[in-house]
Length: 268
Image 1 (tube, one colour):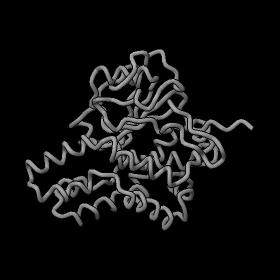
Image 2 (cartoon, rainbow, N blue to C red):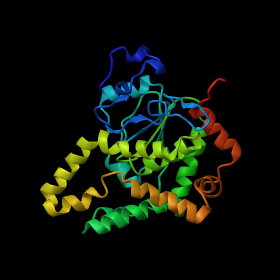
Image 3 (cartoon, one colour):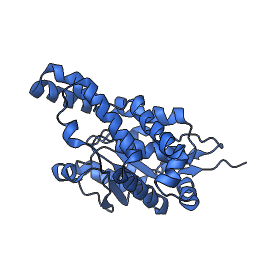
Image 4 (tube, helix red, strand yellow):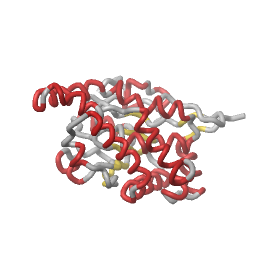
């Protein structure tokens, strides 16, 4: 982890972005970014919610998460992913499996063309909106976050698709503009570039150079993927707010609780 040795005594205001970077989970970051602005003049509260890729952590990084005060970890992966790469225990944090169901994993692992990869990813993002297994998981996650009091973390395998959609929803609820949401979503491509290069190198070694371009489609965050989910929400529920209310069943009280957790309101 890249961090200052005074981390255990640091307050959230003292934590620079570099102080919450984990060597063993490169897509770990604060959902609030550097403190994103909201449309009503507020800013997001840092140190409340964190997002990540899989938590195959070193002992040092597990202890670092504990020192951030994280008490709940929500794992959005399927059972096979969890079994293959179980999360490392984080002292003081309870682990909960909130599986996002309906992802065509068999197809993802047997791609034959770039076009097939793009089609699969579009299906994945539509499924977040249209499939019961996706809606149930995101509904549960957002309800748990709304009811929480201490810092929490949610993650999937790469921290970009299931985790990316959950983060996009939270930022929307908080009142962050869509351009900033997209910028935050695409950050995965920058901060996880080394991990992506490693796995594409494995593809090159085991499947051949011609498959690198094919599998890159499932290893990047792409604006078109996120737009696919937005379009599905508009088509099925009329808007993203309609998806939150009718698709996920989140009432005004839950949405207000989420905003209260996420946003520091501007003092006039």
